[in-house]
Amino acid sequence: MPADLVIVANRLPVDRVTQPDGTPGWRRSPGGLVSAIEPVMRANDGTWIGWPGGDGSGEDDLEPFEADGMQLVPIGLEQDEVELFYEGFSNATIWPIYHDLVAKPEFHRVWWDSYVKVNQKFAAKAASLASEGATVWVHDYQLQLVPQMLRDLRPDLRIGFYLHIPFPPAELFQQLPWRRQILEGLLGADLVGFQLPGGAANFVRLVRQRVGHKTHRDLVYLPDGRTVRAGAFPISIDAAGYEKLARTESVVERSAEIRKALGNPRKIFLGIDRLDYTKGIYARLRAFAELIEDGHFDVEDAVFVQVAVPSREQVEQYRILRDDIDRLVGRINGDLGRIGRPAISYLHTSYPREEMAALYSAADIMVVTPYRDGMNLVAKEYVATRTENDGALVLSEFAGAADELRQAWLVNPYDLNGMKSALLEAYRSDDKDLTRRMKAMRKTIQKHDVAAWADSFMTELAAVSHSSHAKTVRPAKRS
Ligand code: G6P
Image (cartoon, rainbow, N blue to C red; front, side, top):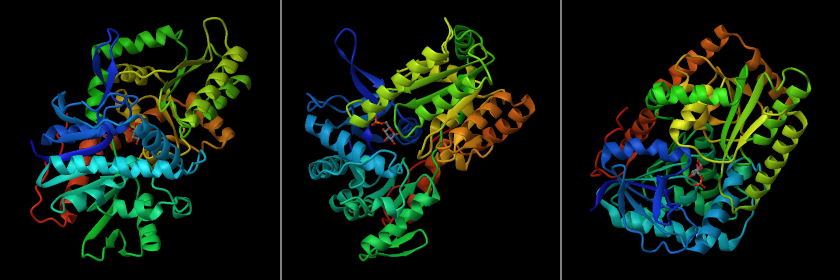
């Protein structure tokens, strides 16, 4: 059935998995994108187009299905598309360039060709499902060509694009051999949304310099008379939902159980990240270990729980990172741990929301130290679950979240001594200081939740859209 709202993202909110008995099943996908978009989908009976994961074999026969009240339309990727489009161009070319070149990007023409082909596939599917005058909201760096491809196919649509990761400064972006095509792809949208004003400004400047369109502040004027707006829409979480979850009896009990299992230390440090080289996991574990070596505290006093969610495991840089972290954790625990008391409790796995909430509740100091991060929703989730206004957040200046969570201990993740000082200050801080900081951060998160984010994007999209007969989309409901 044609849909009035179509979400197009590389991933569906659920992943196809094989269950222990060999039958196919579905599991919630990782990452903040999924939890952010769900509420908008529910409020609008939208349709969500995306890849259901997997290795690319035997996916052609996937049918649209309903999960959790959402209409999902899977797009299968062939094995070569997984390698060239997903692991290659998306995650070994664009991802490192858009994250400050934390890793060295690779440029391969066959990867680009596959990126074009897969974007075309997503655009064609969206065009076939959208009703007359519908709104199509395209997401993230894997699908930057879809807006223009879709406009060529369906000029009647209202098209929004949102980038969940940083948009880099011109000096880095222009390394891309296909820089112009990517800018032109994005310009197919009526509204191009970024996490921060800096990303939007980078984009407009590049469009002026590289494509030669006239621009004024956040507006781009195209030769065909269309106007495209670039704006900042910092993404958020379902704050009320997390708070509610943190108060449930089972989460409260599980949180106490976790503390006990860790030997009831005075302080628990916590890191939860996808295992990604942008996240700064290595440096933060070193900083923590040095604090023990320097004698500031002991393994009886403090433990660092690091959850590393498996991610993009076929990409070489991710394999190297995993080996590096494995070795570092082994060395730190070998040098500093005692029987039953490792310095670092390392878990290479993903957890459901309930277990995450219990971990957040159990932790005294949340450590979020990416070298570059679009937003970082883990930092916001931690704040949302601190219903007693306690707990400390140590946060990288280079995470988008640092713009809003000013009362965190802000750190430069490249500065190991600075990071050690911040961890130690957070460890030693008194209740009064913690409460003052956490209260202010909680207020921010409660006000700027995910419903407010989606609402502001949709309102702006409706205002800027060229299409006078495009339909209006309802804002997401708060839980
Ligand atoms: C980030 C990206 C998302 C992506 C998620 C998980 O949050 O912005 O687009 O879905 O990571 O990564 P994956 O490669 O597993 O989809």
